Length: 363
Ligand SMILES: Cc1cc2nc3c(=O)[nH]c(=O)nc-3n(C[C@H](O)[C@H](O)[C@H](O)COP(=O)(O)O)c2cc1C
Image (cartoon, rainbow, N blue to C red):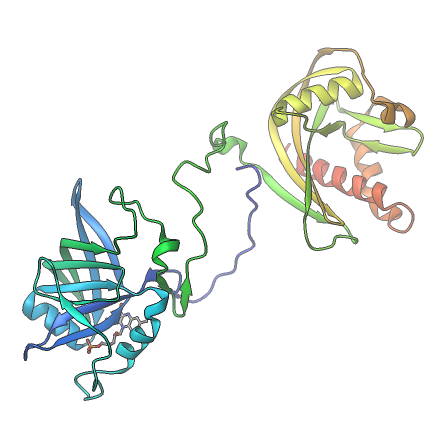
């Protein structure tokens, strides 16, 4: 959940192209006893009671299929898989009424339960009976009881919602034909172990792209940083050797939560024991083929512990310092000054400045 990033959207005129549906060929009986098929994608489902599902199918205009469904009350709903696309295009462009459907291009059987035409090459067929219909202007929507389902015997289907669409290979229509890429998993597979964040914890995300970003992320490092305020001062780490100020924090280790990491990093780097509160911000920095994610927590100082610097931090001669928030803002605001001389310092200062601006906006 924590890596979900907001998207910049724009408003456009009404379009329904994201009402995405699989493509079906609807089989019906003509008055003269011959059969008819037409591509229809406005097909969905609803239910009346627990396991009592109704196919919902909508048709506009005066097409033969609609008249046949009205007259007979029965129809077959034949899934179009990728190999049946030529057939779907044939039925989409050849019509019995204008005399263009000359040679019927495929073998057809009768349904197993209802007397409807069924395409032999379809891997999934519903045999349906109209239960109710609703007219909305030029369109009519039919609610159909499923009287039988025929599926390719190679396909497993343990319950009403179990299917591996990659095996069925359905054609998906959304103004253009698409196919299904891969099976991603089941409901619940993507639930984070610690549950959903509640609304109060929803976090703003800021992305910073370094000039050397390759455009592709191959590695990721996640860190937590703590903003500790006391009487107008903020706790910073000062790295004397490179002369760099930072908001204290560091990388997540093992199975640590970001909060646990924040507590550990601040105690090791500054000797201040903190209690992380609100998660203020997530900053993602992109350099070369790396993404560095930093969670910023507003922390309360609740005591003192022993500082434990890593050998690298010792070599920087790292010291905790309390400076006024105003001074810190001023220091980090100068990030652009280091653009030509020190890309790392520029990046760190821009990151910390972004975090403090967010803090100012929120406080
Ligand atoms: C990809 C595709 C999807 C279609 N979806 C629908 C639909 O959902 N509802 C509808 O009324 N017509 C839809 N049509 C149009 C009918 O298939 C078309 O009017 C067809 O000629 C009707 O044939 P018929 O007169 O033999 O019934 C679609 C056509 C295509 C090519």
